[in-house]
Length: 453
Image (cartoon, rainbow, N blue to C red):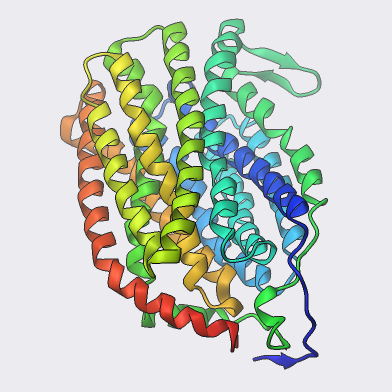
C-alpha cells in the first residue's frame, strides 16, 4: 500500500555528518561483538563452575544467543521499515548491555542461558535498523564503502574482545573471587561480564545523536512508504529463492566460521599446545590484533571491491564474496593443523582477511536487491539465516564432533578442521550457483527508482 505525497528534491546529507553516523553505528557494532564474544575466553572457568560439557557450553556460545537474535530480528525489522530506526538502535544497545552485565550475576546454567538469550534479543535491533539508515545516508556509488566501514565492527569487536580479555582476564582470574558492595561475591568470569556490559550504556546515549534520515527511494516518485507485511516479504524471498535464499545460506558459512570455529579458538590453543594461562593470554591477544588489523583491512578492501566490481558487473558483490570465500577457507582449514601456536595464529591472517570482505559485500548485495518497502525485513531475514545457521550449527557442530565422534577434548583441532572443510565446500558451490540469479535480481532492482511500490 502506498500514499501519494508531493515530491520534494532532497540532497543527501553532508558527507562529514554521514560518515559520523557510520562511526557511531560502528561503535555500536564493535560493542555488540565484544559483548557477544567475550564468553569465548571464559569457557574453561564457566564449565568448571557450572559443571557442564562442551556441548552444553556450545549452546551458551551460540544457541542461547541466537534464540531471540534470529527471531526478534524479523519483528524489529518490520518496525524499522515503518518507524524511527534511531530509537530502535538506542533501545537495543541499552537492553543488550544490561543483559551482558546480567550474565555476571548468573549462578546456574539456566540463568546464564536466559541472560545470553537477552543479549541476543537486544542485538537483534542493530543490523536491520543500521543498514537501512545507511542506505538513506549514502548515494549508490558510496554505499559499499559505508557498509564496509560499519561491518568493520565485526572484526574490531571480536579483536578487542580477545585483546582486552587476553590482557585483563588472567589478572582478574589471579585475584580470585571479589565481593562487590551490595552485590555479593562474584567469580572472575562473572566479573568479566559486568565489566564489558555496563559501558555499553554510554554508546546507547551516543546513538541518540543520529538523525533519522528520509527514506530516499520515495523522493523522486513522491510516494510515501508503507512497510510491506511480513507475509509479503516472505513471499518475495521464496519466489526468488535462488537469488536470496541461496545467497543467505552460502554466506551463513561466514557465521559458522566465526562462531563455530572462532568461538573455540582460545580452547583450541589451550588444549592443543598445552598453554599456561599467561601463554594463552599472549596468543589470544595476538589473535585479537590480527582480527582487528586484517579484519579492518578486509572489510575496507571488500567495500572498495564491492563498489568497483558492482559498477562493472551486475553480480559484482557476489564475485567479491566468492573470491573472499576461497581465501577464508584456506586459512580456516589449515590453521587447525599447524604444529606450533605461532604458525596457527599466522594462518588466521588469510582466514580473517577472507572472512571480513564478504561481511561488507554480502550486506551490500542484500541491500542492493531488496525492495525498498521491505528492505529492513529482508536484511533481518538475511541475518536470521546467517545467525540461525552460524550460532545453532557452528559451535554445536564442533562440540558434537568432539564429544560424540572423537570422544576426546584433546581432539578439538580435528573437529574444527572437519567443520571448516565441509562448510568451505558447500559455501563455495552455493555462491557459484547464485551468480546468474543475483544478476536477474539486480536487473529487477533497477526499476525501483521509478516505481518503489
